[in-house]
Every structure is written in structure tokens, then in C-alpha cells.
Image 1 (cartoon, helix red, strand yellow):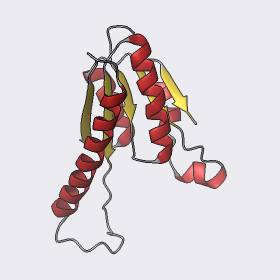
Image 2: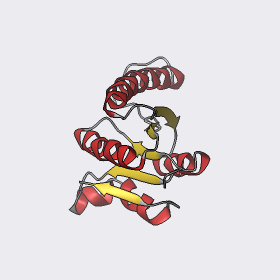
Image 3: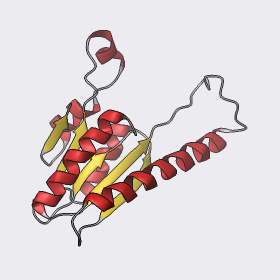
Image 4: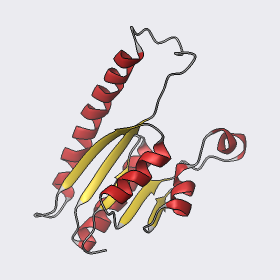
Length: 147
């Protein structure tokens, strides 16, 4: 653990921000760098939910620009909370959220994953894939799920 980064995915929600606090504490405790990742999922298909865009590429550019701005702000704030000598890295990926997070874990030899659980229950749980639960079962590193 002391030679690997801690990965904290974010969807820019309050719950993800709460999990980031835990990730910063764990990185500080172990003296390792922190990696924050956001996955832009594919928001388009047969319909575009009434969003006025010229093309799918234009929508993707807008989503990446928004994510880049938000992630940059989060990284700057997180870096202020990290001990001197430790770095906060960031990455924006696109595609299937679970697959992209598992790839990030493997590509960067992550030592621990800290992820927020949105706590969906009932029908909402069935309609929204539980990424945290899937990562617990599939990641090749310890996973801390924060409520």
C-alpha cells in the first residue's frame, strides 16, 4: 500500500466529495499520492433528451470541457489538503464507468480505491447500476465504500 496511489472516482456529487475527504486522509496516512478520476459516460443514443447540439462530437466536447473545469477545481482544493511532497493527479476517461475505473486501477497499479455509494434502494437500485458494489467484486485492490 505504501508504494501505490489511492484512486478516488468522482461524479461531482456531494457524496463523491465526502468520499474524497476519506481518500485524502488515507493518502496522507499512508504517505502516497492521490489520483482523482471522472468518467464521462456516453449520454447519447437514439435520443438526446432535447439538448440542442450540432453533433455527438459537440456534446462530447461540452461534457469534457465541463468535467475538466470541475476536476481542475477539485484537484486544486485537494492538493491544499495533502501533505507537502504528495501529489494529486487527475484523469478524465470516457465510456463505460465500471470498465474505465477497472482500467484505471490496472494502468496505474492502484493500491486502494475510495468510492462513494449513493445508497440507491428498491426500484432505483435496479435501474441504476451500482458501480461501488461492482468495484468491490471486480477490483484487484482493496475498496473503501463511503456512504
